[in-house]
Length: 355
Image 1 (cartoon, rainbow, N blue to C red):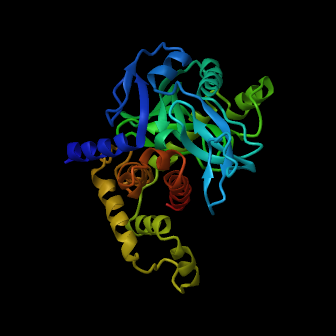
Image 2: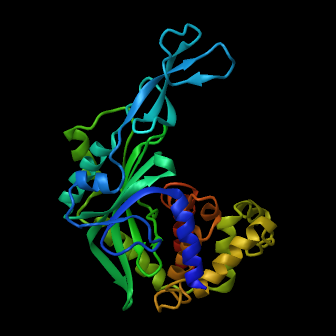
Image 3: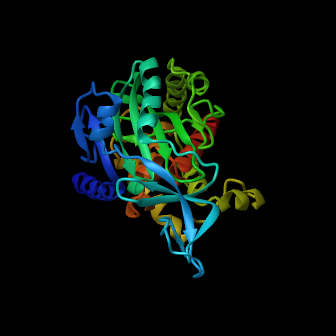
């Protein structure tokens, strides 16, 4: 059964991942080109299929309503320049990645990976994975930190820096710390009273310079403080046991947010109405993951709030709607899945504090 699920996830990932390269062990989804662990950023760029550039091209329109064209048809007077309107275009195949305004500054894949290397060198890390998602609209890379930790005897957590540069307007380049639970490849999150010091953003309105690099290194704290902080959070969750009613409320609050309002109005705060039909399947998946997901029976997870958190994370990363839509990696790291996991961590800690 697990092998069938893994095969299904791999097929979905193949649809989502445009190109990819990895060093070390084969990723759980089995995709990408295997490369040497000592590759330079430029070599990784080529092997990951990221050796292409983007350009900001002016937009043109015709006398037809709602028609825009990125190519200047020289000599054809019916085509008119759209002032302040541009398109972000991949030069290798003229694929339009996004519309943008006059002030947007494209970040090239090569300079983004070079920028990321400054972090990996400072933290004595090596980039393990790089690739593109959503047909080139999102570029990403993962670099493994030297320091990780174990919960119990064999529940391993590894720390990574995650790079994301989007060739879509309105999205900044981001570098952030993300822990990964080895046994199930859950991409966990840090959200616990940490403000934003586990991530650094550069909007597409400024160029790279040494001041930005220094500020980013300081903001991220590559010394490993994030790993230590997350370890403390995780050990706390391992030490606290779940109760059935609290687990039910935890799932309900995550996947039917209106229950927060309904519970506040109720005479009995512990009494929640039943889940709406569209959320029942998700609740069933979480309950199943509590018992059967990879690592669920480890002593660190069985019957603990750490196990409950990872059940939700497993469903979000591997089983929810984003999988069916071919959007799993993007959702888990940057989209609605990441937001759900941040909320799940905060709520798990709140319930654990009451245990």
